Image (tube, rainbow, N blue to C red):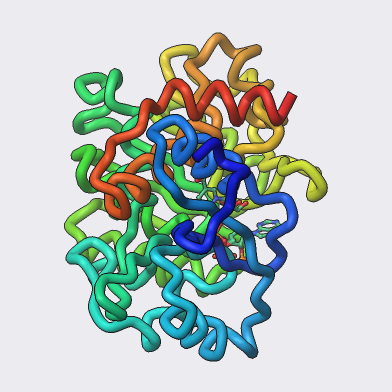
Length: 286
Ligand code: NAP
């Protein structure tokens, strides 16, 4: 099987989301199937929210072996699943599904995907402070991850105040010392000065979206780690500011690859080489 010889026995995996045409997940998983000689193919389906139930039933009917779930279905898919792992239950969001004997099991690999690139900095971040900008599904998975990192103080900023406060409540329930802060240049720059970790979990700065979260390099501590979970472009406007400040930068392409690595392991039992997949994605982005 070289990734192109699709036969009657070839297993099918997929991603569902809306929109989906810019997804990098097919590149990642098809590269891994090819590398490990697995007779399988991974395709993308554009599924609108109003037909999610029909699409998920189709997964079972057609015997699709596994799927990645992305915006806007990560929370909405839950009622259609047969069971979920502990992390997915606690976050109430699913990004990976395995079809096991026609039972759909939901997982959340975003947490591990977010944490793996931070592994070299665990000691530095323990009991530190973090700013999280964005309070959507990814923001929720990140708040959960920050508890695992033993972050001491978390400041959450979000355009829509109510949603930001909901995430503060969730983070507090997890045991984090969390506070809501304004989504404005003055507040964010002020907090950035002493933050050990700054995270963008909004689409601001993404290819095709543009803009940036309003944090300027003059206010970023050179010892800080700045993590933009947007995978494309590799260097977002926020990461550019961080580089100018001399801070450590982490591109969202790392999270994208690591969440896929764990999904692949759940589906096939094989832990694929993250470096191989990262190189392939970066090659496609550039
Ligand atoms: P989501 O649930 O739709 O939440 C989007 C978040 O971004 C909300 O906090 C929203 O604020 C904010 N936002 C959206 N447009 C904005 C704008 N124009 N100005 C200011 N804030 C804005 O999406 P999500 O699942 O959390 O994903 C967020 C981003 O993370 C996406 O860009 C996605 O591509 C990226 N992501 C990357 C990975 C990875 O593996 N690298 C994984 C997951 C997500 P409001 O509450 O005000 O709407």
